[in-house]
Image (tube, rainbow, N blue to C red; front, side, top):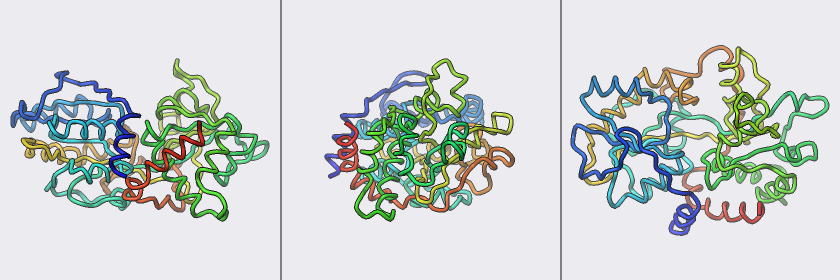
Length: 364
């Protein structure tokens, strides 16, 4: 199963590498103990200013290899495992983590951690990877469309298969998007637990396909380009057409935080219809990795200054329990569902290939 899963994964997700200073990839053998090479996506909490502060205080030079998202971080790490390019891997989430662990991508980090939110340690609390942020993937809805009168707020995922939602829901492809992958895993669990024992997740996806659900390759395309109640309406790329989108339960809070305290977006607070996503950082298990430098950077990533900035920079919850979303509009417009999907990362690793194949067949 694992070989088939990885073959499918490599065939579908393109390898797109965009390096940041100094701008080229080398091998770990070329690295010296004064340099820390990091594979990641654009973790916005790691601003140029903060990296400069770290370099000045620690004496290390930091070189990033940045790819599209957490899935591409994993793919790049697996493709280059025989000739490691980096010392530290940042950005693989719990929908991909088991694959990384099964293939020995990490070594024990060996650092002391601050007290962490229980959500941050819910999927994994071992020594190989450190959770640095988290959030709940769920559906967001435009309240100017679903006003509770002419169009009801959905109280079940089945409601989105009604005629009034035809062509008005946008999701991300689970083969190319980590929120999309998390959302697919959630639907498997949600429809296993609902009252209708005659249907499963594939039946819901078939009805969504029949109801003209929009599918994009990634979160930005769906949320920024199509969602009518998000900040994308101010962007030149805005197309519109969607009044429900797969995003995060705290996305309306972020909209309100930067939107003067109000937003037309809400998260659907449907029990079991959210996926608790956690993002991790870990030291590369490649021979010659700069372990001391990687550990120094992990301590920096978990420091109060970085962790306190996560909600406003990476737009996620900080892993450290000393920090939360900012009080006020951010927190007030963030939904916390009664329960999340109970799809373990081990089950995701074992069964995702089958789920994707069935998703492909019903969405074709």
